[in-house]
Length: 195
Image (cartoon, rainbow, N blue to C red; front, side, top):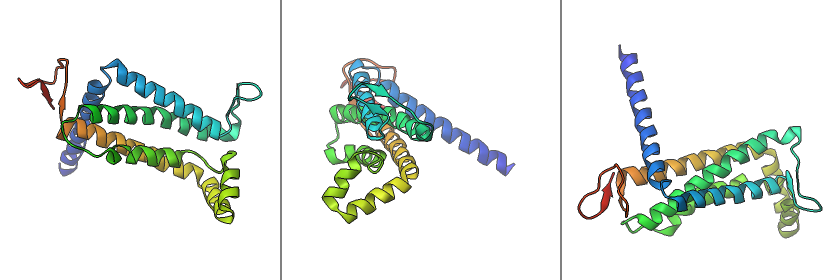
């Protein structure tokens, strides 16, 4: 009986978390400007990630080449780019519409860490810049990033999911967001949406 109650409690918490994400996504992505921000950010970072992984080439001819050993890296970068776009668009929404005074640094910490750790510095021509700039320290950093590329990208993906969770939590739990249009979440007389 205790196991059933514990399982029920876990399922209710997961359901609450799902509806929290859904409410935040509906609130942010109901406006075309934030869809455009997310789409543009996703496309730009997908191009950057695949160029750094040497899967996308622009010279001498525009081409995309996916060898068998790079499929995992391609899948991770293709998941990371849209998540990054969603996090950036949601952060912009919170920054523009929040009545709380929040610092700009808090918005970009999770996003910037995940971007830096997602780009594989050792599997591209960027490694030569590290070698020439930092010498043996650059070689050591490049070797470490080469050996642990997949775990680093999985950690970056986890950081993006955490950033997405924190921004959706900020939208649905603790902030009062000003709006100009009516949503089904309830608007009081001061035109502020209370979530």
